[in-house]
Image (cartoon, rainbow, N blue to C red; front, side, top):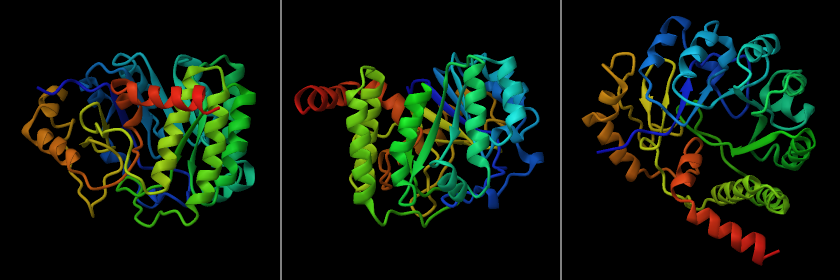
Amino acid sequence: MVKNPSDAALIITYRCPMNCIMCRIHDYPSEQSEEIGPGVFEKLPHLHFINITGGEPFIRDDLEEIIKIVQKKTPRIVISTSGWFTDKIIHLFQKFPRLGIRVSLEGLSVINDELRGRKGSFDRGLSVLLTLKKMGIKDIGFGITISDRNAGEILKLYDLAKNLGMELATTATHNSFYFHTSGNHFTEPENIVRHLDILINNLLKEKNPKSWFRAYFNHGLKNYVMGGRRLLPCMAGTLNFFIDPRGYVYPCNGLEQRFWKEHMGNLAHAESFESLWRSEKAECVRKQVLTCQKNCWMVGTVAPVMKRTISVPLMWIIKNKFFHR
């Protein structure tokens, strides 16, 4: 029998104030009336980690109610945000200081504002981070979605994160139903890899073991950019899942109709999460994951997989940190 998952991402809205070049979610917003209410999340099982994302989570007026429910289901919640709604963010973290936050930044001010399609978005994002830092929020950082246009910004953001004592998350632009994209691709992968190699070396030189595992993650990201097959098995729909704004449970957020796209059912309509998770339909989705032809790293599946297959990244770290320096 399939075990309970450990990680989940709650996509609570497709509404978003950004106009990102690599994502068209802003052209396909969910209607407020069709977004599932906070009460649906009472059905969630106990999880190790929950990511609340969107769209822009802070666009929902009932986010505080969602947090009150979800915090009973997990010891760690991280909200992914553009940082645009400064006052709402500060207000929420004053009430819930143990929350984590990751602000999306695609580079320094000029590049970020160009790629995210909103002038001043870098300033707002950085201002939020600095304010939360002063408030004593511990689980804090920002992330970059790497593409040809911002490869040169990777190391700048790494230096910024290090100087501010914050976390830097990296991923690469990709296509999915979630982002309503099919044309994202790399025209200069070698240039991206060159910057990732420097980032990997810098991470391996740090004294923090967590940074070494980030180096391995970026090694896998480099492999993905060059078109290689993923380095770790995909456990989407087994160790983790995504819930969309309408309540449908998907194995991951990287599904594309041209490959396949199936959900496990709707949590709002299910008797319980367990009945949905262990249903015949959910098992069919997991079988499709095993034969998935899409090549991805993939966003949202790496952390729980690395917990289960720790020997693979550990051997890579030993080899590259202690023998190839």
